Image (tube, rainbow, N blue to C red; front, side, top):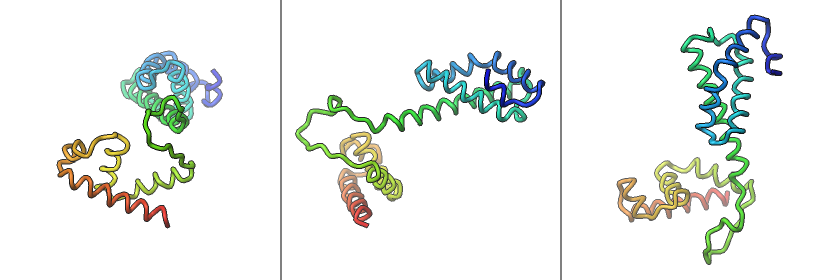
Length: 173
């Protein structure tokens, strides 16, 4: 238990050990439910206990319901952070055998250009951004988007065209 080195004082160390022994399996279950991977969940729980060790003064008595909720929340957030970090690392990898069979030419965008496009999308007016995300991320047809957004299909086409123009203008600048 190297984490104990973070905790100051014998009373806080004793409290930390009690918390660890009492709640580690519950926290592990919460992390596994989020990550669906036992080893990653163990990493998330260890990260959660590092956070607990750093903030021992905020934690009440081990048997209190508020303490249990606090530890579950820390475990949940650690698992979500790990999930996001893992997705960010693996999200950019695309293997040739995973690509759909189509006649369309493949394009590659350098990472810095990719982030520029993402920033432009973030700054698009909401009505264009929503349509773009539904069309190009969710791969929905214009008719489906129109139904979801409760607008006409022609409006969807118009917003897509205007959104493309806005993106092109931003990329030129």
